[in-house]
Length: 566
Ligand code: DCT
Ligand code: MG
Image 1 (cartoon, rainbow, N blue to C red):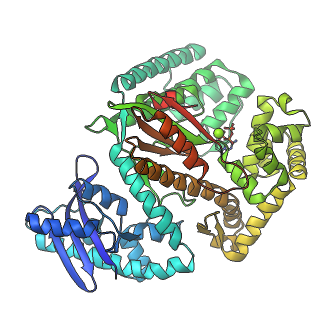
Image 2 (image 1 turned 120 degrees about the horizontal axis):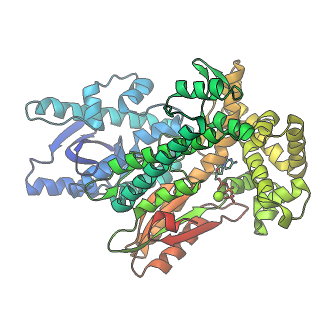
Image 3 (image 1 turned 90 degrees about the vertical axis):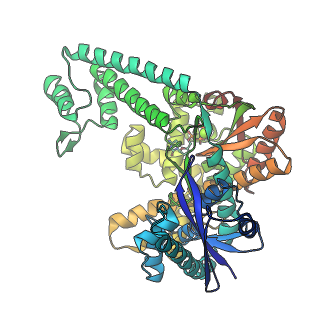
């Protein structure tokens, strides 16, 4: 018999603190105000919460772990988190709030007051104690019912193992990472802000000089006047308010005309965006001088972990200016360095594995740079004569095909004629035929099954595959193509996190994992543990999946996230 636990969360120093706990068990219920307890009953509660043999279900396991930890309370034996099982059942829902899940699956209405109590904001203010207690117990009762209903649903979708062996343990690891946070070098942050300020002012001045007068560079209306009336540049795509001045159009306009105003305008925009990002990072530094992001396991339908408040996944990585931002994330006192480990070409490796394409598999087994290898095959030159332009072309094509790119799309992306793109694709598929067969097969199979599945069996249901609306259908087809690859990459990094966390604990190391971003893990390494951590991270990440091709892990070390990059 599983007990349902609801924890009342109130804003705390970092994240939330637990104020009260409601427990529903076999029809009976208890409400415990954590502040008003004597030592003896607190011990009983603490013992029960920590008892791995006492099975518990809840909604929002990670938040509860953190909130209870702030009171020194442990939590073991959690066998379901309905905010995650609900997601595994239907990964494309917009929200997994308790009230919504209860309404959708059980047709039960949960008052917003009660839902809030279980899900964050309801603060107990003395007067309304009884009502608040009732609300929290009600939440636990709903969670109990919902979890029972989900048991069957999970079994039907063969998702029980994903929940208990992957997602729930990952919640634990993420809770620790969120609590740890990552240290920020405020001086460096301010320095970068000041530098960007100069770059922005300079770009603005040069932009004004290029047209001989001042203009508000942030105003699309004024920009249109300058670009299309004054300078008479070729018109971009028509939109409601004239012609678009979005980034892509400006880029293509610059390529066509090379106009100095555009050069400066784009530099101005890029730097302004970075400055905005730095400002928002600065605002999210907590009292302890660290940034504590919040991860979500139920936002990205592919299975990838997302990061919020602040989002650490959208810090640009391709430009040097963007990478520099990582320099503000630093090792903290008492630790030796930061270590960044990431998978190289994980999507292509998964593609090689899933398609079983002999050429791709052999290339990886031989330790070749795959994009170079494909480039050599497509452009009919030896691998050492594949230029970086050729390499990025085939890279764009390889990923493009996995994302449902058409020859028209490819021609636009590579700025070549549709005929050329068609030939390129034909050459590609002539060489790597199993990839084409695989991609076709994925969509056909998904149409029959109603879902796609990752290597670990994470499903994504795609009812629109049989829609009569062509746009919906084609969109579902694109999702079907890429979900097994994206989703498998997500499963792999999650397994790797469990492996790394497990090995750190097993070896009694003080080093800790801080961040998970895309295919990368960032750790803070304690003194004297560098070698051991490097070894275990390489091993654990490499062993996170058994593919027909090896998983390649690259490691960098430094005093900041930037320096640890590679
Ligand atoms: N990506 C994409 N389309 C591209 C390039 C990248 O969809 N044209 C996606 C898929 C892979 C992910 O971004 C990471 O990008 P890269 O690191 O550039 O890809 P890679 O295969 O790891 O190549 P490289 O060896 O150059 O790092
Ligand atoms: Mg890469």
